[in-house]
Length: 337
Image (cartoon, rainbow, N blue to C red; front, side, top):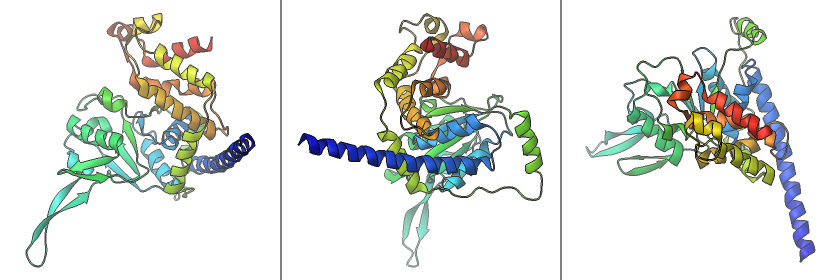
């Protein structure tokens, strides 16, 4: 019996390795196709793709004109997902996102209600400038992101699978905006900070996007294949050392856990969902970089996008000019030493 069990285990491992190698090829092709349209911004592309590959949502934060919208539409095309886009405004209502019931009348004069689905019924929803919508509309999207279904007039409607929200936010404009509540921020697997491009990349942008023709990305995979890759990522083994590193980092970011720097500067820290996000994204990052198991380096690399939107500084720390990024960089440095 022991021999049979051992043989079965070997076959399972071989199948896992074969699936992973196929996924590596797909991901490499996805990266190549995205790079035809998005120049530079490697970390932005990587982290956004990691969020999708891990089966979650991402919040892209950056000033206007940095190709955030372009990246999302490109990913929709390359991943073969049905996409939709909503430009958030203060007067946007929940029904504008979720859909609404309309009254129909047939030839005999009989009236009935029919549900017309809103833009949330897509596999990839781009929520542009999400912090411009009112809390009422934000909470409607929150249910969709967490529960993967909406409820209209007591009737449940399931969202398509896979379902991802890639939201953008302008960090500069505060007037006329509604900051996302902590509960909704926590629903985003990663926060992706989008910075200005490097000189060489910006030169290429100027030359290649102002002519008569622009490169158009082609579909590399489809929704079904993306779901397979997401399942594969959840099956990847994670060593005890990596799990311990995730726990140590997440717990060190919470006040009252024995870290002097955190106790002094952090008002509240990340919950268990941060550790879950780190586990999934570390596996996805390993696969993204051509490895079959995550390492502690993956944990350190993901510390900022996983933790940044799940922490808040004390008033004294903000008054001293500190940022959440500074605190996270210090925690990573401590964990390495």
